[in-house]
Image (cartoon, rainbow, N blue to C red):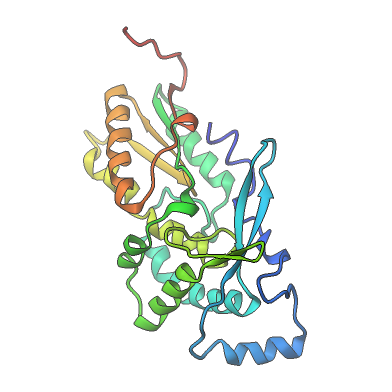
Length: 265
C-alpha cells in the first residue's frame, strides 16, 4: 500500500547518483575546477554517455539501473532544472508529491489521511511499471514548452546512450535515474493524469467523486464508488499508453478502507 511501503522510503534517486562517477571517472572536483565549470556550462555542450550502475533493491533479489552523468552534464542539468522548475511548479497538480520542492512523503501521507478519515472509500493502490525506464521520448519532448536551446539539451541527455561494463547502448525510451534532471522529467511525463480523473469525475453536490494522489510512480485513487474506481483504472491505463507506460498488475490492487471487498462470482 502506498502509505506504508513506498512513501516511507526515500525517493528512487535519493542522492545515490551524486556519490558515483560517470564516464569521466570524477566524483568531486576542486574549487578552481568548479569556477571554470560555471563558465563552461553556459555555452553549447555535447552530452556525454551515461555510466550504468546496478543498485540492489532493498529486500528483493533484483537490481535497478542508475544512469550516472558526468560532472559537467550534472552541472548543466542543474542549471536547466532551475530554469524550468518555477514555471512547471505552477502547472503541476496539487496532489502530486514526488520530486517536488517543499513536498515530502509525509505531506502525501497526510493528504491520503485527510481524504479517507471521515468516510468509507474504495481505493485503487497502483504502481507504474518501470516508469523511468520506459518513458517515450517523443511524447515527453512534445509536452515541454521551453526555449529551443533548453529543449536541445534535454533531447541530448535523453538520447546520450549508456556505457554498461564498457558496452555502449542507445537510449530510445527512458529518463535515467541518477541524473539531476530526471525527476522533473518524470513529473512532466505524468502531468495530466490527475486532471484526467478530475475532468471525468468533477465534484458533485460539493462532494469529491474521485481523488488522485500521486507520489513519483505510485498513486492512489480514492472514491466512495467501486464502479468509479474500476473506471479510473481503465482510464489511467489508456492515458499511460502514449507516454510509453503501464500499470504494474502485480503491485496494483483495489481495496476498501474499512471492509474486505466481496465480489460476485
